[in-house]
Length: 210
Length: 333
Image (cartoon, rainbow over all chains, first blue to last red; front, top):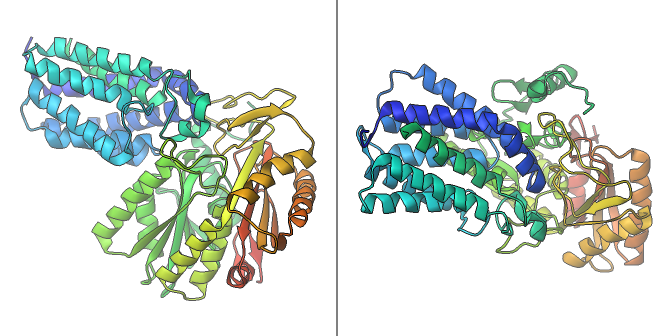
């Protein structure tokens, strides 16, 4: 098991995320209906289909950074809502942080850069019941894995677990950002749709390295 | 779900084709999903663009034309449009006097419009000023929310700012008058039913026969509280009193009073509600300078209404009265 992140691995990850988002469109829609406006599933599905189609057309792209920036640009220009800017900016930031060779350490930096970009854009902190609640623990897990010199697949599994725990932790939270925040206490008891799609990003990242 | 649609995925595109066919005085860019006034750009005039998710019609596309918006960007249903749309619109409506972006205060709208304004500045050097509407009193504007939603005042602002631009006022002046409208406007809405997003296939939330939702927005999301159904008289109090208290409006103030239908409520009921609203305003000594009753900022087929009051100076009333010719609002021409 190589510990470099390969171009094929990155493409497999993006394809995997698109597939998972598509399969769970209904679930994301339901989560977003409870505390939002019921469009997260549809929007992510549409955005990822566009991202995959852009990747197919750019199949000679051999730079990991460019691949992720392309995905980010497509997401910004197809998803809409808040998810488009947030996920688009995240993928662009990851792409900008990566060169032609990607080690676990590079990936950890890229995922952290994405978190910083997401937070600059939306000003969300952990506890606000957003994407950040799943992304931050995943980024932290990757940094820990780097400092402990863990192999890639174990590191990504730990990141997935962090994202999963973060996603579940959003359930009791009262939303302080986004559309759910209009509901006040009524947002409590519902899992955040953005944290849910973020967990999918890290679940498919781990699956692509397995 | 029962809707007048074909494939749910094609709703916005097909509606735009219908708008284009029904309104030859407008021009529609189907690739970017932007509706333009037919004679854009108007040289020397500040260009006004807005946009948002589809499903709120006539907001914003129905307000495109002389005296109001120069362009409206249509997102997917209840989904903010993307930066490329606003970038295209900004460049097309630029008549050399700058462009005003009218943005409703939702996280997605604000982010996408900001990204577009940055791109416009970088790519074309067009002067862009943004004004954000945030008139909804149902949401506490605090560190713990995304801030007050932009709702009914958006309609009033687009008309008044549109008139100011048509008069040849500068970008700064048009933006200033827009900000005054927003600062002096407050709204509150309620729903008797939710609505169904075509691609979702079922209502966003369920309301029982004897229930209503107070403090709703325009995206089919639940409101602040669910209460037993009450007569129109009491509903009007639940909407008007918080609006009056929030600005606050005082005895002797003149207002533009707007009773808006959420899409699924008949005009018969909206006028009945207006009667209740007018009675409450009279009781508080608030004078109605101008009124607007109808479904202008909707949430698909949601049944319900919202009340918007804007404190009106003579200048604002004169701008309100100025000629306008759009699909949804037409007077003085």
